[in-house]
Length: 402
Image 1 (tube, one colour):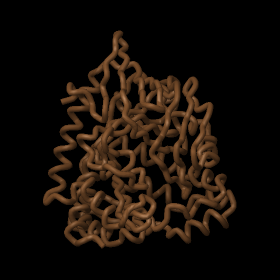
Image 2 (tube, rainbow, N blue to C red; image 1 turned 60 degrees about the horizontal axis):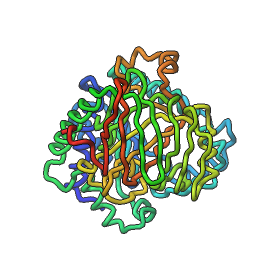
Image 3 (tube, one colour; image 1 turned 60 degrees about the vertical axis):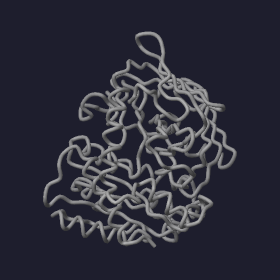
Image 4 (cartoon, one colour; image 1 turned 90 degrees about the vertical axis):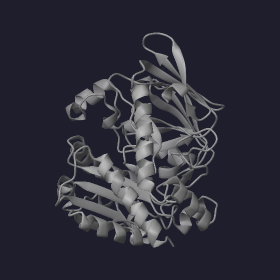
């Protein structure tokens, strides 16, 4: 059970994230959706109190319990799984902000759900995501995501709830009297790092570790993004590369949960930008089914690096939100299969028509799945002007990053 003080600190950090994530200021009367799993209710109550005090209009939505989700995906046919309830589009067009409090009571309850139904559900939600992406680009919408510790998360991370909660609080700086002040400091430091990276004439990146040897083509008109307020916590610096230039082998040593399925030891072999071979030590069939979801699911939508000097996360947390920001001994990189991020376009994202996205090699898919590598690694930037430079090694960016 989180103390009232911790709940209030987390609510303040989440609102800082929300306000930071939107590139236009919020106004009195704006509509903010708060979605939450049942164990996160005490934090949702604090958030509603804060939102009302700021003059915004909260819309609260309790997410389905594991039993309700299992019933739905096991009993629904494919048409029902892809059904879009009335009002969803209107809600997305009218929202100004969204906060999701993930607090899972189960991570494996959908393991037996038919994959075609999971895919139908994901595909049916893509048009809604496209609406929110468009509105985020024009500055009328912002979002952030957080988690609240649960016994299930602790169990799947193979630790106690108290130990899990301590790591969660440390990662979010909730063990400090003024966590928002610390997040502002991290925001400034990562802003300088991104400026340094964006000034480099990088053509491609070569990632090398004991089981990874991958080349990622940055692509034309790209910029590095990260620590934008979208996720709490978040320390990663990322871009959406030109998927067409991805070549080599990528290994994810960090396990991953997705739709109740556990995947460990995933190896992806890329040729000409597409996954030609996918294997896993556990969950291989599910991995292959997800990659076959649509044409873009077998392509890269994101490449990310986390500097261990920023992140206080030093263990597996059974949550992608934390695991993709792992610091530990050697930091991490992660590769996302599926959809790309328009905010890594160096120009005005509003001008990115579907044709322009295609020409620039931005990937499009209903899937976005982060697969994390925490091995000791070296990332070398190959420059368009000739020559190269190691920009990341042993979990840290080059000293020239400041």
